[in-house]
Amino acid sequence: MAPRRLLSLCLAEPDDLAALALWCQCFTPLTAPDPPDGVILDITGCAHLFGGEAGLMAVLMARMPGARMAIADTAAAAWGVARYGGALMELPVAALRLPPETIAKLRKIGVRTVGQLARLPRAGLVAGYGKAPALRLAQALGEAPEIIRFMSAPPEWRELEHYVEPIFAPAQLQEALARLAAKLCVRLEDATLGATALTAQFYRIDHAVPHIALGFALPCRDEWQIAKLLRERLAQDIDPGFGIESIALEASAVEALAPVQRDMASKTPDYEKPLNTLLNRLGSANFWRSVPQDSYIPEYAAKRVPVSQQPVPWIKPHHPRPVRLLTPPVPITAIAPVPDDPPVQFTWEGRVHRIRHATGPERIARDWWAHPCDPTRPEAEKIRDYYVVEDAQGGRFWLFRAGLHEGISAPRWYLHGVFA
Amino acid sequence: MFQASPIPSASLPPVLHVDPAVHELRAPGRTAGHIGFAVRWLTALAPAVPVLWVSAAPDWYPPGLAWAGLDPARCLFAQAETDAACLGTLEVALRGGMAGVAACNIVSRLAARRLALAAKNGGAIGFLLRHAPAFTPEDSTAFATRWMISPAPGGMVQADLLYAKGAQPQTYLFDIREEQHGATPPALTVLSRTG
Image (tube, rainbow over all chains, first blue to last red; front, side):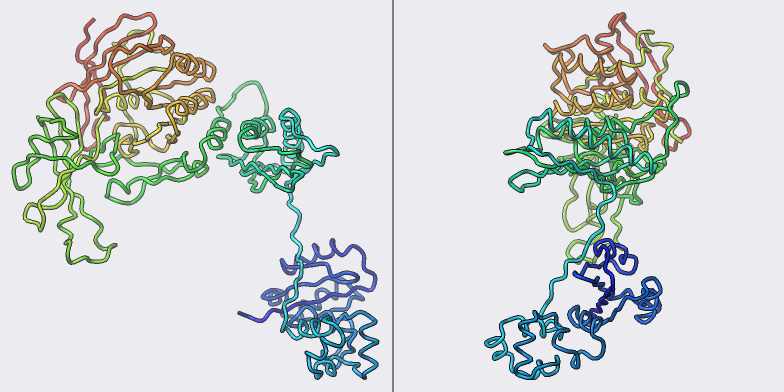
């Protein structure tokens, strides 16, 4: 792991440190306010974007004249160097951010610099002066971990409501959700965005946070639709317990959504509403689009993709394909003249079907180049010969024979589909 | 690309051309003639209308739908937990103006009425596919038509119109024309009509 590099920034007149830390996120994603007068930046792997560490410091200096800053391997060392200057070992012990009484006690025994402190035996230091000097020294030298609470930017598309009295009646919750959805949609509309994922979090007074997650097939900023979908899930997913003190509604993913002209004529049909309702009712695993896949093996010729993806054009298959595919193929017993004739009769779940017409075979082999060779089962065993057959009643089926007659094991017959 | 001729309308009673409606298609077990019938009916719709296929145990095969003449890119597939959830899903789709096909075996009269109403409100066409005998105790008159689609020997399909509002029960015999290499689109041609 690469060594970490941390930059400590010290301001003469600190203003709002949290706001400054957020602003500093244009240099690195990890920034934290460092009260009372500074900000700490973890610039590991970010300095080269600004022309190295010197370049980064020059950029910061140009924007904040009068600020003092230093870069070191640990946050504690960077803090000390930024405020006192020079090499770490030559700094006064105050650079370790120790309380004044500890500094006074250390001065009594003649310890004035960090270097002098580092030469003292640690066990005796802890016994005589408490844990603080030894811990701060270890943190400055990178021997002990230091916890820094880095900030994350507040979510952009989030609406929050607090309640003086906890609420729990379904009608109150529904009202609150409708209000939040309306507020969020106004903001989304101003930004011409639509939500593709929404989360409603319910902060209960016992600190549990049940939530409702919504997904959308198409970006949506229709407050009525959002409120309706949330209402549908409210009763089954949310237990208000002893009361809910705040509710947050956040659009966790947004996409561009152009404004629509609301006029009376020339209304283009819009399937966004039923799609979003179905997606949230069924779940994304149970609602899919089918896209063609480049495979001759019938099971792999189609692939499920989420509904939110754009449809992919299909081309018509070159050979007959059934409308129902049985997965996995059903083993049947078939009577067929050898070697390559279609069966004359087959038995499926105890019922005998006499075959009157058959076309085929359509031979489909496995894509052998994509699989490791198995000497006990040669590729000939995995060849499938498909036949379209019609029985005496007119039912049309898709059968295949796996394996060849001269193979290691006797060929097996399967039913794979039913034609319309 | 996907030019399937719809069912020739001239030979069918005019009551079948009521567009927003739900049709019930039945078929004997182990056959899929009703799926093909629904597919050929759906191809007559505007190509922009998405088609929802829902079932508790979906085994539709998109290349097979493409072979029968319906573009699978128009289709959305859903799996519901129960037959009742299937009908609820179909209802949402129909109310939203999508075309819908649901395969389920248990249909109450109330559900049938709700589906018919949803189709009317949404201006949509829906199909209910069932493996059921021609007459059951819970037969509903809410659906615009009720058919029994059974295979007939020689590459033909026998479609019995069991019930239609304002029409007599009849029996049609269709020929499934399916060219191997796509010279002619698959089509159903009426061979005979009785009743």
